[in-house]
Length: 417
Ligand SMILES: Cc1cc2nc3c(=O)[nH]c(=O)nc-3n(C[C@H](O)[C@H](O)[C@H](O)COP(=O)(O)OP(=O)(O)OC[C@H]3O[C@@H](n4cnc5c(N)ncnc54)[C@H](O)[C@@H]3O)c2cc1C
Image (tube, rainbow, N blue to C red; front, side, top):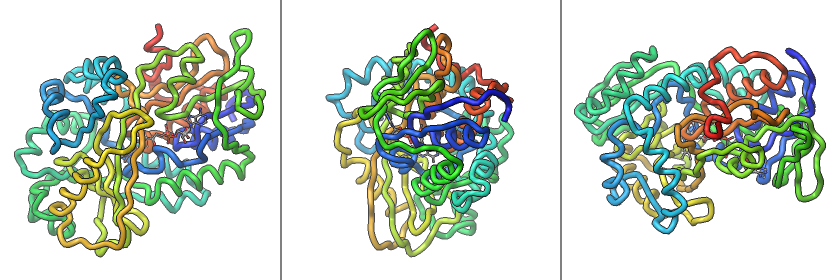
């Protein structure tokens, strides 16, 4: 405990909110964790389970502007746009694509490294002594390309990873087959990075962390937060349909749904839901040794408890549209050549929403001008990885401590000033 004791409402029980609640409880605060669906039911349920410490490069890298129109129109590309959603998408997309430059990518990579670079240790520290510990697994991470030429074309990304201290080795087809015979001819080259981690069941993991928080006295409420009340420049309460909770501190950790709550705190945020998809192959005949990013399909193949999960791709259709069929067809098409010979009992599928901010950086910290208001959302493709560190930083700030990393790039008011 570094300072004062607060009465905190954490809104959202994904990996970010649950991590925040757990660290706050460990620091001695009174904590209520509120989620309309329950812990680990939204995006934190269906991700690829990767602790992507090397995932510092944003999606909009240099060259995306030139490729984007073809990607949007070609059904073989892992990008799905619901055209009726275009008017709602365009204002955000214009801001997002402005970051598709080498300079912006490098800036983002450097800003996010301190948040994700130690993610395996961050998860181990969060889960230590709880039932969630068993889901944290250390592993290699492979990036699989169709050919060595395709790997070379990604050189910009690998140069940045090298600058950031990530060492890798490149395997050709034969070396990859010796490393893991599960992979087929579709992967002609793979880069192997050590010292990563994975979560063997992301939904169960977040639920186990929430249970650990409850054991420390955190009160869990399953309801939707309608508003955050404030008076005299301070947070005074959190409004639910059934009651208003009196609190002096509120943390918005509602993932892709955070925009409205942030706006009630006076924070403008270019946040848009970015859909992602998974299929799971239950009781497979073989298990991959490590997670592998299958670059041609932009999805990760991850070994999980009792199944293999293929998760990734990008879609823009808003919250209410039904899942498109195309991503699932794409998974099955790539699956045949990436994991040939695999058999399994049953296939299940899922769609969820990443919280995507136009500069690919989360909003973490105190909201200026509203005492007691904090944000912890916007982690797009690396929220599972960054959740525990985000929670620890927020708990430090709420306790009156100083974070030990540079949090200026995550300033919640950077789009409002
Ligand atoms: C296909 C896919 C693969 C991915 N793979 C990875 C990966 O391998 N590694 C990685 O690090 N990241 C990955 N991600 C990203 C990661 O899953 C997200 O960044 C992360 O889960 C976001 O966590 P969160 O806690 O911010 O949000 P969520 O998990 O979405 O939680 C937000 C919660 O807030 C609740 N909520 C919303 N509004 C309200 C309200 N008004 N009142 C009460 N409750 C509310 C929701 O019910 C929800 O439970 C992936 C994402 C996808 C879609």
